[in-house]
Image 1: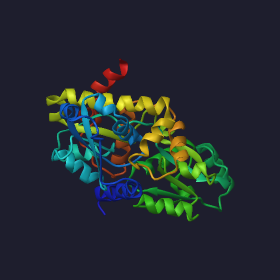
Image 2 (image 1 turned 90 degrees about the vertical axis):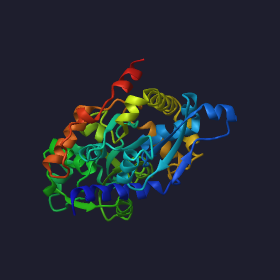
Image 3 (image 1 turned 120 degrees about the vertical axis):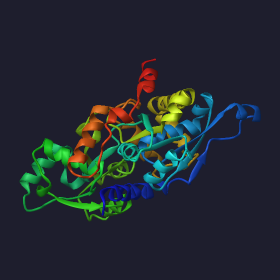
Length: 344
């Protein structure tokens, strides 16, 4: 299978696992008076579902986008490639995708610009069954060396950033894939089931779906992408077409301000954010699990990504022949607007 197809298949599994928690489209409330509604600028945002997309959802449910002059319609996709295609064809104005996807779009000639992180850090997590007492990558190395005849089975996605988190964690503590048994999936829903049914010992996945295992006591957190790469390495990012950024900068700025407004709610009153999200049924996990996922982020939500770390991950995927990236991050990312807003 060609690696782009594999990556798309892998991400499709993630979305199928998570988009079951939301309808295909969620629309901002239209209860405001008609004259106010007519003054709002309509925009469509394509998305998947993960913890770092919460600023989009909270922004819709709280009215943060309306306060900034936007009527936001959220459009859920079950395939990140389709999300990219919708942006390329102007079916959506913004999209939120894993940070590798804009590289694919740019390589295909799409004039895409990534303007910010989606919001949330340390979203990709590696967890282990609690009976092993593994609470860090160093603990993992000690366990592996003390139990050479018992290879841990680790579920991951080949050709995906979730695999690279593991590979980099191994490298930091002197392990290799030969020291464990890697179990490769192309469906994150199947990965979750495998972990739940004790068919694997460890899991590389995404919050808040990892959080539910930690909260019920069946798993411990080994590491996350914030520790392995950097605190501000994103999982997903916000992208627009270049014509939107250059021709409608006021809309882009209003969108980013709406995201900042939502982030303030999540950062300062996470319980309020959880309550707001009930309105759209965005995450099919218990409220306490979602609250814990918010409260255990390694840093408050911000939106300026670590581009050096992003480029480093992409370079690794190129070396592994997982992707072909002929466009550097500096050509795809334009985070000048969010950097300016976050300094205000």
